[in-house]
Image (cartoon, rainbow, N blue to C red; front, side, top):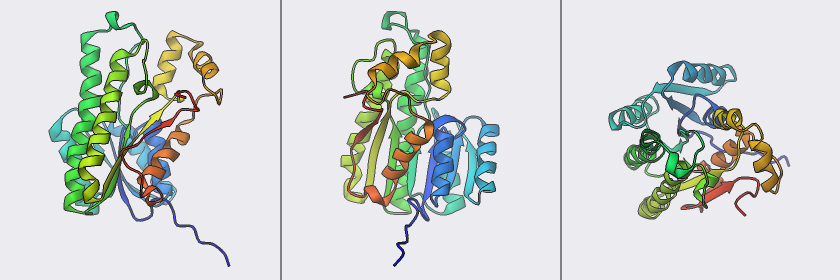
Length: 257
């Protein structure tokens, strides 16, 4: 008898922030391939449209919404657009984030600190507020995955404000897991290690040896590709992880061990 495997996210409606590039774009493609209807959200509409076209070309379902995730009205509008198009919200991958130049704490700029906190911390908080409300009012349950970082799990030299913003995401994740678990909403985070995205390429421009230096400390001796992070997010969003909540999952090749 041939086994029939159900796609990880069959018939689910999933919102992905930061969906225009990198991990977010790869996740959006994967989620659609795994059966989800995907709402793509980011600041740059042209990038979202390109990813949406790619998904449609492979038979997937996606819609786009340009939003500033540091602004409550913009986030609420993105969630509202999702409900208007699909009628409910089952899952969300809050992946959008920003980074800044690597520098010791005493040289970090206040404007960089404010930017990081407004997107990486406040932006996730705003998204969770709107998404949880939508889930409670529509699906009655759901799964949220927040993008943290391996830099949130220990001291993060040169990236103090960035690591702090991601540690704040861990706290939000665990608190929401406790608060909304009784309602059937699971909330987890993933903590990627070195991943080949635009952000790491910016660091390479400053320190050409950075990938080799970090890989030497990583048990798997290499950086991740975005699809490897997307795979972890897809599992946490899916029913295959139905008894997992409040977890900050390292997806880092062992770097945090």
